[in-house]
Image 1 (cartoon, rainbow, N blue to C red):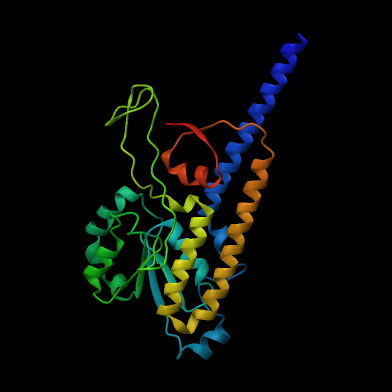
Image 2: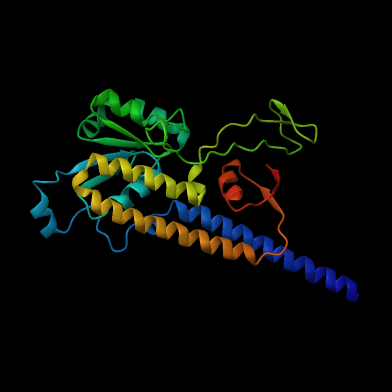
Length: 275
């Protein structure tokens, strides 16, 4: 009975650690795309205080930036806090990746004026080849600039780190490639969900900030200051995640979604299986 009790206690502790790890990973993933994590402290909605706006109105005309994803919107908003740069997300409440092309195509006429008044769009087109935002914007505004959040427009500067979507090796999977269990798994390809890596989110913020400072040089100092704040918050979140993992003595991880590959890779977690 004593051995059974000890085994049960050990199993309960491991279950608790597993649940704690799952909570920590979920919290980290959600925090990356939460405005409160990335937004500047007590910053108004991308507007200078009235006294500053009136004094700099002639030197820094209001600029509109368009995004279509939560991560690009929140990074853009945080980096342009307290500036004359306005960031708009289309659609306002967001849209799934596979529904964006239809959204921009079906509403091309209604969105034309918005694109005509915009100076730039923030996309992830170099990672997600089907990103429809720049194509939709350019059809209405030939002068619009594309800011790619995943890789700078440079032949020398590096972009974010790219992870491949893990092959699903569950016994019931059936697609194009055999798994170790004899089932067939989907062919791997670059995963789009780069922001689940804190390091990638920080690098993406740097890429966006550099282009914004060139696009609106009058706001460069403020954008640079905001970038420091964004990076600081991301690194703080990284440290808290690492400390949480240090408390887990024995970790067994199964991934229930291929999108988590950036998160598990950054935390150096061995994934026993992907479903």
